[in-house]
Amino acid sequence: MVDAMCSQAKLNMPWHYHPLLMLDVGDHLLCVICGLPGGYGYCCPRCRMMVHEKCVSVFDSPEITHHFHAGHSLKLLTQGAPEYTDATCHVCGKHVGNFLYHCDICKFNLDMVCVVQYHKHHKLIPVELSNMKVHEHTLTLIPKLISFVCDACGTKGDRSPYVCLECNLMFFHQKCAHLPRVINVNRHDHRVSYKYPLGRGEWRCGVCLEDIDWSYGAYSCSDCPNYAIHSRCATGDDVWDGKSLMEYLKKSKTSSHSR
Image (cartoon, rainbow, N blue to C red; front, side, top):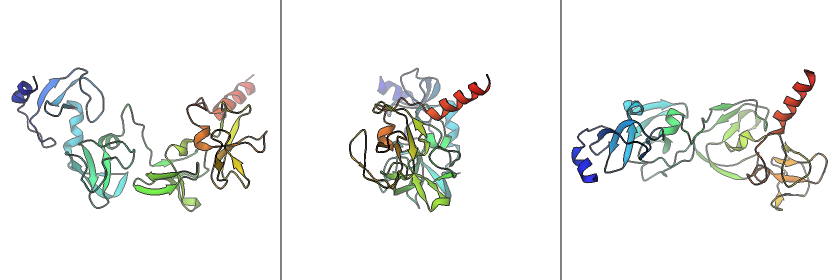
């Protein structure tokens, strides 16, 4: 069947190296641009690749500028990342596949999802973050491969952190920049609050029982002076229910004032 479809493929597009068919593939293939199934689009039977007709406009420009890499223009590549760089997006960390935009000066990769900034499996990655719970200043994204230690959790990172330019380059993992201020954890009877830095002392995590570096951020209990938890341990799926108590407390205060 694949051979029969290949023989019918007659459309030559500059962004793919095999002839293509126009058809509705149903739910059998996902669009390599938006990641959604179904719909009418360009299909390569050999590669089992599909691009929605409405998504093809992404390929209109073989070279673009993008705010994630403002220093240089990015060139469209259709046969995967070059061998001299890894095959991941340097912003979101996902595998780039065959289609990506690339800066050969900086060896910088940007996948198609981050170019169009939407996807059911991706969230928009803002260039700046303000009014965050973990820090009082605006945080700015540095979209590049860079080794750092996150000030919010004390662990290492290797790409695209948020930084505070006002605080002598404090670094934050993208996830840690969104840490909640106050939460309940299932390993302690009281709520715990994020604190940076944790403060001098010999601290041991109440979840993993490993030492905590007091010079970084962590969660502590105001009722139990010696209790603290690593930021990553406190917000793990098996420890935290995902609810921020700050929002709950605000709603409670609002409802009490309205009575």
